[in-house]
Length: 564
Image 1 (cartoon, rainbow, N blue to C red):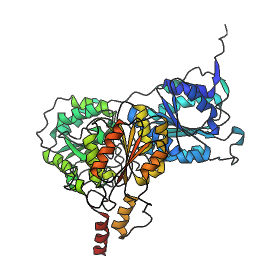
Image 2: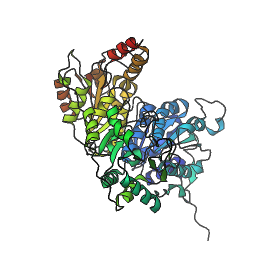
Image 3: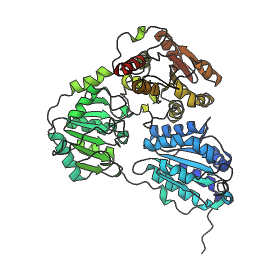
Image 4: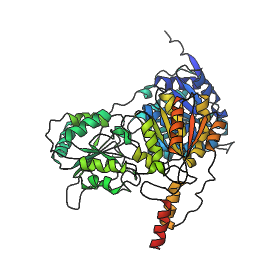
């Protein structure tokens, strides 16, 4: 007997069904004419929330932050050349941050491909360098299968973004339901081999000064990381902007390997005789410009071992004596179970070195000149905000005070781009509040980053979100000003008009706004923001001369003059 024909539906409906079955719950987009049916199918699907943003850059950052916080991919959708170009910054962020993301790029109609049609760009070629996989689908009946494959690739091994370009005439075509979607099956996370486990355990136990560098791959293995560190009495560093992988108040925590890491914090890493790297690709920032960890002196045994889900990352940056391809959580749990008797080790001095760098200097709350000291802003946040606050971390020199002053004691509390992309914090806060509405969410951003994507405050207001945006307004592109002052002895093109009425800007977007020039004004505004019914921006007027926790802009310029 002949089988009855499979039911028919549009290709867009099938795509959304695949996404929903994979646990994906949100899509962020600026709607475009090249994916009308996809937007419509998402709007109608009961399991999917379609979020309209004010710019594709914001949509990309939202999808990245959503997935980083939840571990489940989110979708970002954009149209053709201009939309795809705007979205690219967020996709590149996902690539460098190893964040799973599904990207749909509307393309020109099939008949017009390759003719430089309206807004046409070779999207597969454009996105190939910034994704795990980029493809263009040319048949509507292949869209569901390609979507399933995209989910599998985005979530397997080292997670990352996947881009699917779709000609505009495909989404609306009615096609038969695919018989099977094998691509939706996710690969098992590999375990540490018994021999690898025993060799690593013996090495850590025998070392005099073992340390662990933990990265984003250990984000979902916090308990296992703590257990392994305590089992071997090993000190723990967090990689760049991954400070929440290990409780910062734990006596084994040695600090954050971020930009401008103070030398006393690095001493324990420089003196370590065993360094276990777990779930970190050892980026330029984490390694302090590819200097640490050292793999051993010439003629000596290498002192570095590495565990990573991606074989391409193992030994890619520094020589390792043992490299294991394994899931961080499974590997750390296995190591913590090996019966060993490690040496007694006292990390109090190394932990204290980090604590010292996190302590605000005296007098920051009485800063002269009618401007706030950046330390006073972070200290006020630390005093008033809940411990499990999700802090979204923009790029800029103000962030050095946040990295030092905020203590990440609860898991999944830091969302920051290791790519260093400006404009991340406000969109990330919108996504974080959607993903976990019960938690306090605070975006921390400079005035430069705010004016790149701050219009997403309208999205937050439209959604009725109670998020807080703390802006360090100093009228500068501070990071570049610092580099110019140090290297050239002067600045160029870094001044931003100001002070701007950023509180008024927020009110114009439907949010609440407040201005703070004193610690008392900041405390009052922050308390009110935590009780507000919608988003609040707090414009903190900070001293532009205080360019980092270690120095001032004027000191850098004077120092360059003295050297010259």
